[in-house]
Length: 201
Image (cartoon, rainbow, N blue to C red; front, side, top):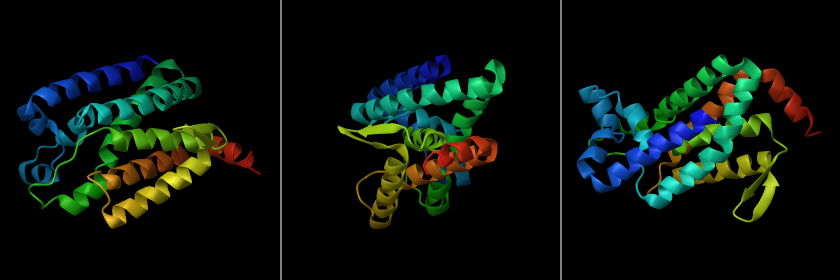
């Protein structure tokens, strides 16, 4: 679980710095316009380590802790210690990238659009877990439910909220992150997914 802890530690440090230093936050948050027009490609990844406020940070890191450590251990068990660690790191990096794709397509010419946070990458990790353990129990606040039910409700809400522009939240990043997590696991672990879903019936 040490990689999960390292990512959480870096994220907390970056976010705390961003809370107190608006210049730092502005330099590293995600601006699709700057990525396209100024080639500031680092923003695709750096924005993951910044958050809007303490509650945003806490919620994302708690979710990442519970599901990140499970996926980290799964990849190590499946691929071996060294390769598994590399796969987990690569998965997190790719999740950060693909979580920005819808935003980039929509806002690459919108100079004042910006976003930040690990929510897209966390969504990818959450849905990778759901694909491998659809019958596991996820407790949403105080309501326990099968992981697959939570996933369907979560994606349904995100699509609805994205379509209706609900809240100052990057629902498109949640959606693209979740879809990447699903596709990644289907490509790399299809037999495990088949076995997991066979247990549903």
